[in-house]
Image 1 (cartoon, helix red, strand yellow):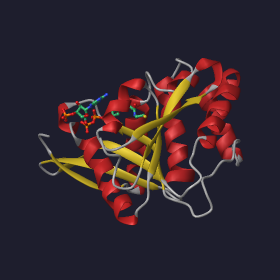
Image 2 (cartoon, helix red, strand yellow; image 1 turned 90 degrees about the vertical axis):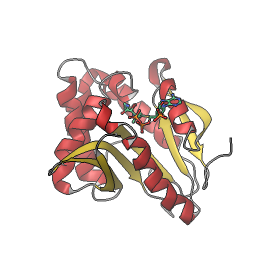
Image 3 (tube, protein in one colour; image 1 turned 135 degrees about the vertical axis):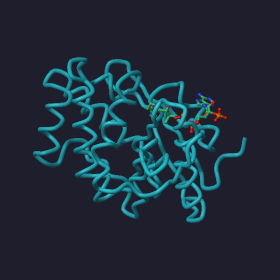
Image 4 (tube, protein in one colour; image 1 turned 30 degrees about the horizontal axis):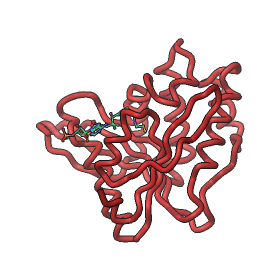
Length: 213
Ligand SMILES: CC(C)(COP(=O)(O)OP(=O)(O)OC[C@H]1O[C@@H](n2cnc3c(N)ncnc32)[C@H](O)[C@@H]1OP(=O)(O)O)[C@@H](O)C(=O)NCCC(=O)NCCS
């Protein structure tokens, strides 16, 4: 890493920059992007992440960032949004619960792709383990040299705390190319999560302390 990197909680005023970073990283080759029309995709995804941050991850989740410093300037290099362990089990609601969520989904996915996007979301929610766990909902880093290692530092920060709590963590790897990245940090493949139209993601579980190699 060529710039000093700090991992910390995301601030409310950083949401726009984080949503833009996530939108750029998720625009191609991810399960989410397969439900978003090509036209204005970046803008649609930015809206998706802005609303997810506002209604879910900032008020109810754990939103963390890796920040790079050059001189006096600060810039987000990587973003991780988690759902913390819940004693009542994961949120498995299959459909949007508010008008804002529904209208956002319509604007992001369009009428034609909305049913498939909803089925994919429901499949993801069913795949969540019943036991209390950390859920890595979204992770992205900038594709540039300064961001090298930032995503790993971000995950390691949260995993040290999860290990101290004795709590495991669950995620879905959107593409097979990221499975190896997560395996390095102690996750292991559990099962495919089958979505609509033959799409699938890969559920991964990391027990507290990480899986042994
Ligand atoms: C996934 C993502 C966050 C990883 O970010 P990154 O910048 O590559 O992460 P880091 O720089 O911290 O770590 C990369 C390290 O993991 C290694 N790595 C990456 N993919 C790997 C793989 N498939 N198998 C093994 N190692 C892998 C790299 O070689 C590198 O190791 P090194 O530092 O020893 O050279 C980034 O690619 C991204 O934003 N992708 C788009 C969004 C996305 O797919 N998010 C995850 C959805 S499940």
